[in-house]
Picture 1 (cartoon, rainbow, N blue to C red):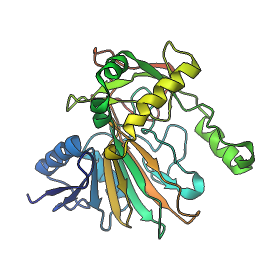
Picture 2 (picture 1 turned 45 degrees about the vertical axis):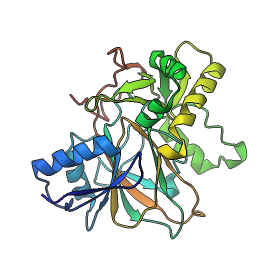
Picture 3 (picture 1 turned 180 degrees about the vertical axis):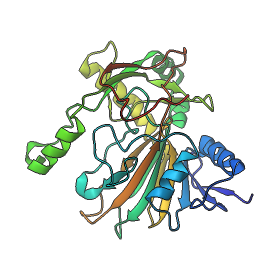
Picture 4 (picture 1 turned 90 degrees about the horizontal axis):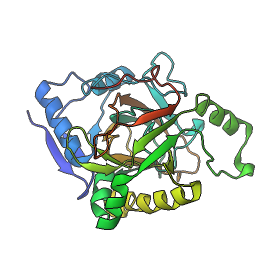
Length: 296
């Protein structure tokens, strides 16, 4: 086995070479990639001629797949593949994928199909490093907090920017309303690391008012998005990025003048998050069993 792992930044990201992800992986290759993901949180691969079927096969090495999304449609004929298309909307806000359900994906894969000649980078942040950066008093506070995550909230988009198409997209996204309470500090089930489990879908701290919640969440979020904790990935065509959705956040930068940008996403089913006291997340509203099984 000749897998090589090359760090991209000190705190997050590595390039993986010496493995052909277009073919079935050997068990030792899967183990090496999983271990590298635990260390680096986000891994970049050359995808070669990988297609939708190959991307799904690669992701299945790490667990059972989710469908494309709880409310948004999949690629035709590929129910596990979500088109991340600039024409269908832009995820230019910090988030962890689908945290509004009880067991969000454990890992996400993004594969580039069409990339703009400039811009369109994906930022990925290390939430474990963010937790370690917290001053001790803030860390003790965060350890005690729970946050309510939802897909139905005020995105604060000016009325003049809401056209008929965007209104329809938002209606689809919230066609099933979800609310789930997660620990603000999540313990990673494999590495034991603690990470800030917040992001854009975290809208309220349990027990606090909306205004108080926003101040606390903004304070903690500022540690997640410190430049030292962020990988800025500039896409090339035929690349695949695998990132640990349990302990990262990401943001797709809208800086490409509306040029075509298309990726395909396949996600691996996750476990129910657990806080530092061993308590599991709990659902408040919405059933996502059609979207994802629960990983052991």
